[in-house]
Image 1 (cartoon, helix red, strand yellow):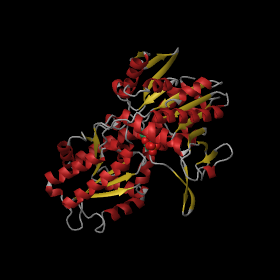
Image 2: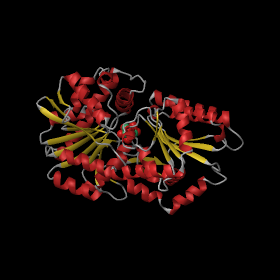
Image 3: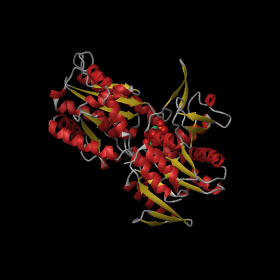
Image 4: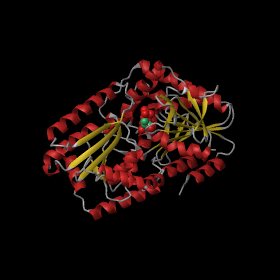
Length: 489
Ligand code: F6P
């Protein structure tokens, strides 16, 4: 089993003599102005949470876009700052982009072209040439920062996600020293015919093929990617060894399902304060009803929040004994607010929740408590521990770490996980109750079945789920990725 210490040893021994870099759009620490002065926050999202422990253990430099309004005041003359601020362990180098650059590269091409294209949830990408030009430009800014840091020496560079598909090629073409590079794509890869609707599909694929290793969460995303390069670029693909030959080089493609720090979450969920929080939640002043459901999402149309509320509506209609008896708490963290589809989603959710609550409300009881924002961590853990059901129902999701966090925090083994068949996590979490989020009737029935599942069955399922997540934790993801990358050195 991997641990932060064993991964540190692995990096030290296998990557000896190589400078170690992580490159991503999202930065792990964000400096913000607040009424109480400058505060350093961590962002929502799996990427930074998964990689921060690795960087803390292995030192190295993380190159990322500066996104906080106090970021510029907290770097040295080389745009660097040491993080975590309370206990510095590694270097964060910030890449600066203007408002217009961020609009085109992040809100534009990344989140209005690549995001809907790869998630394929009937949401048409906006193939706008100015987004594409902005994306190329910003990818160049990241490439410049990498080259500046590498300084012609030997380096292992690990790129992340769909924001930086072109950067690996830009770096490889200019690097003087020996660069080994890898890329982890944190979202799904669609079938080749969907991907090739993008007018710039070839350039994106060529950008990624400048890496030596490309990782996806699942085997089927790897296969979709290999089929895309075969069709679009005529690359030679070996589907047995998951290797691509292109431009005289070999590129390996591998599945690495991302995960969470199971032990850390379990330990936190067992703290006495969590029991006290559970009492508060279940108190007559807050939720004195028998059944509690919980959901935690980034506010994104791929997460299936609207479809979930329709299923809850149908469930209450079809099984009225749960009226005045079941409360569903949804915490939705606002995200990518400037993108029109996300703005509309926020409004649609608010309207739908109002409508459903209006329809069923009785006295103090209303079926949905919708919290727009992040929950305080201990409250979240208490909810994960006390909820009868956690519903994770994306229309499409590369992995989904909320499902795994719920399992790790459900230390009393009395909760049921309802999981969409379209979440990457479903491949591992076989003991979840699996739903098709588009099937309102089936989804409504699944909620009922989950609430009525016998205690023994719940315990057995949760025990098995916990075993899987404990074993396949984030350190395994990191260790497997780094070991595979190290073979290339
Ligand atoms: O799941 C894909 C992803 O880009 C993650 O890599 C990231 O943690 C999350 O979405 C958050 O997105 P953003 O960086 O746009 O806030």
